[in-house]
Image (cartoon, rainbow, N blue to C red):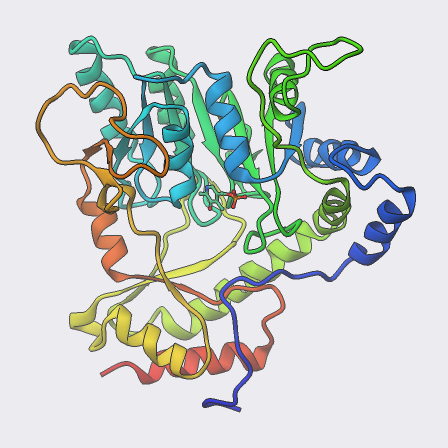
Amino acid sequence: MTGPDAKRIYLSPPHLDGREQEYLLRAFDSNWITTCGPQVDAFEQDICARTGIRHGVALASGTAALHLGLLILGVGPGDEVLCSTLTFAASANAIVYCGATPVFIDSDRETWTMDPRLLAEELERALRRDRRPKAVLVVDLYGQCADYGPIRETCSRYNLPVLEDAAEALGATYQGAAAGKFGALGVFSFNGNKIITTSGGGMLVSDNREYIDRARFLSTQARDPAPFYQHSHIGYNYRLSNLLAALGQAQLERLSEKILRKKAIQEQYRQALADLPGITFMPEAPYGCSNGWLTVLLIDPERFGSDREAVRLALEADRIESRPIWKPMHMQPVFDCSEGGSPISGSETGPGQGRVKSRAVGGPVSEDLFARGLCLPSGAQLTEEDLERIIAIIQRCRR
Ligand SMILES: *Cc1c(COP(=O)(O)O)cnc(C)c1O
């Protein structure tokens, strides 16, 4: 069925097809209805086993994990942090939570992730100006790892730590190793739209035990080891609920199946649409394997005869949700990347207080991707019928 009574198709809805209920009830019955417990511990171990990363701390969100990750790398007021511009706001927001200034680096045309050459150029300039950034926040976009070979080579030459935002990339690989492993610390998200979900949740991971111990301490209100409540540091209430960790365990058991299904969906879109003039897909870089989280395509309005927005509205008219790709951070009203008064000295405002002074390095690539890119429904539960409906509407938009 199509039209106003058609079944609503969402972009990336939760997909609970495993032992979620059983594990949730087990956690419920154990009475660990709190932010610690056997399921939290087990979920951390499961993620470590799956990714080959040594240590992890389960947190209330990916955003909380980014915030703690930056704090552990020593990011504070007045610092600059280089960050992928093509990302979800949470990556940049976490930098501002620390009082630091984001410097947004444009995408590479071939991978859509941070351009390693722009990063190297910016670091050279920064050091000539004697303004060392504190860290580099690299985003794995739509399930595809950034190009960590050159990125890590540059960063280690300048002795700069990388924080890997792998919120969208659980299960992806780069040269055979798991996403999340390529920084001093890595971040996963289990938000409702991610490849696995705990409804809300995240994890900070690292091979460095001290980092994760410190994050665990800060995430549980920074309680000193004493019989009474004593605090020598300002902490946070950032831990994951034990009930939600139970969901995470069940979801993770199905991750491989979800990836296979998402790759099959991507392949079906490609077969049906890739030959249309003016349609191209997000390139899968040869250095790794994407987890297929979202299928994303680019529409060239000249050649296709309709633009991205026309296609989005045609899908929406049939109750199908699609979304433009992330609006780059350097284009966001909240980040003031205008020239003038360089070098900048920290954020002039804080969270919730208006515009934040920041800076952009390049930008045309991500601006073009934003103008033409569309994320298609990619839920693992999409049926053949759903896919045919979506594909037919896109085909009909061609003029
Ligand atoms: C979803 C997402 C986050 C934030 O994760 P939450 O769990 O929603 O806080 C951070 N970065 C990227 C790139 C994301 O896609």
